Length: 380
Figure 1 (cartoon, rainbow, N blue to C red):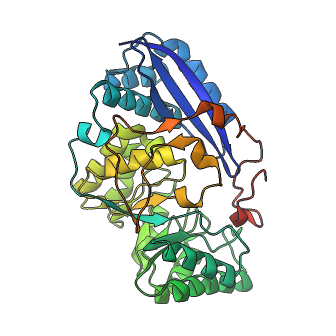
Figure 2: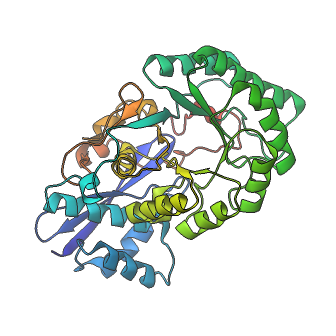
C-alpha cells in the first residue's frame, strides 16, 4: 500500500478551527487524522502540505518507520500536531485494512467503559449564578464530573475582588451539583507560585478533584513547588510536547496524575509512551482533549486499553450546534461514561460537503486573557 495524496480540511468551530487531514492510498482505503492547533490554524495547514511531497509513495501501514522518517525530515523535531495527525490517519488505515477497531490493535480492553468529565459547558456570564445553572444542567444530563476555569482573564495577579468572585463561582458550582459530583478547577497557567498556593488553600473546602496547571506549564519545578505546598491534587502535562518532558515532570516526585495531549506528544504512539512513563512513576493519566469529537474517539480507543487511565476530558456535548453533522460515528457520552465503537480503525467519518458550511475564521479562537472569553463566542 502507498500514500497517493494528502488533503487538509479546516472546519470553523467558532472557538477553535478544527484541522483534519485525509490520507489517500492506492488501495482505495483512506485514513482520517486531526491536527487542530488551538491558536494556530494556517501554519499547521501549511506544515501538512509542506510534508506532502515527502510522504507520497510511502507505506502508511509502516507507522513507526514513516513517523521516524518524518521526524528526521524535520531535523529531529517532534512535529507536534501535524505529525500526530498523520500518525493517527495511518492507524485509521491499518484498522480499516484489517477490519478491526483501533483498541483491538492496541491489545484490547482493560475496562468496558471510561468515566468522562465535561468541559466547555460554561458559556455565559462570569457570575456564580450563571455557572451554577450551567453546571446543574450538565449533571442532570448524566455527567458526574465537571471542569471549569473560574478565574476570568487573570494573569499572575488577581485583585481581592476578582479572587473573591472566583471562589464564589466555585462555591456556587459545588452547591449546585452536590457533594457526589467531582469538580476540576482549571487555571490555564495563569498564576505565580504564591498566588496559586493561596488560591489552592481557599479552594480546599470545595474539595476539587484537582487544580490544573496553576503556574506556567513549561516550569516543572514551579508546578511541583505548588504541589508540595497545598493539600489538593495538582495536575499538569498538557503542554509537555514530548514524552521525555513528561518523564522529567514526574521524576521531580510531586505529582501522581498528568494530562498529556496526544496531538502534542506524537499521536497514538506518543500517548501510549506517556501512559507507560506514568506507570513507571505510579501515576495516573487523564488525557487532555480540547479538540473535536474525532480526538475524543482517539483518546477513548487508547484509554480503554490502559490500566492507569484516570478519567477522560470531553467537550462534545458542549460543542456548537450543527457541527456534529460534520463528523459521524464518534462515541457518545451516556450517564457520564463513554466507550469506543467497534467500527474498523478510529470509526469516525468526516463529511466534506457539510464541512464546507463551516469555513475557517480568523476570530475562531479563545483569547483566555481577555474579558468574556468564557462565552466562547469566537466569530459569532
